[in-house]
Image 1 (cartoon, one colour):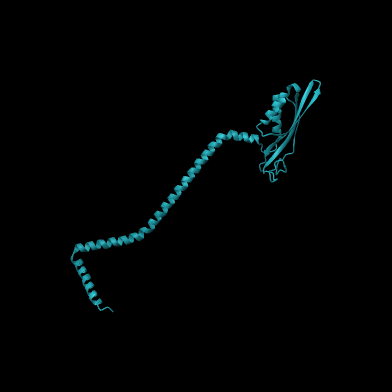
Image 2 (cartoon, rainbow, N blue to C red):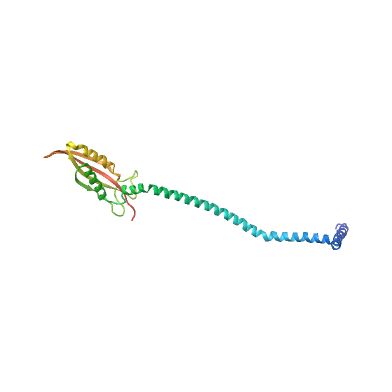
Length: 222
């Protein structure tokens, strides 16, 4: 054991006794020391007491920032939805025309009315009109709409039709205009075959025009 420890002990003992003596003798030192000890104690307790509060505040700040980001995204989505609604409202007439152009089910009567309207417009009587088989409900088995891999597109069918009209030979342009307007119908009619012949009648020679075509229509699931 170091023999100098006794001397160090006596020296520090006398130092602390001197400080205690001065603390007892001088009121100002006692006041300052008590203030310092009080501040130190308060600081220690403040650290332990405020730490959970500070952590909670930090978490709340993070949560507020996250909610601000979410709010910004929601506002952007609302703005996009408003723009989409505005676009839909602006294009609604075209959407209605599209629904009219592509029928949602097998309805040859609508096509027949369109053809009859062209017949009246161009004074070319319809001598006969027929429509092929169609799917009224369920899945179609038609192969007229096959893709490159041999599979028919889902929810899509073709309405096959044919009709015959005629006009006098000196009014052959009526049939030409009839064909032009047929291709300009709102419905996407595709002409796949045309046959023409002439016949002599009592009132003169007439041209007979037979037209084969297809009209696509969608099949919505019931």
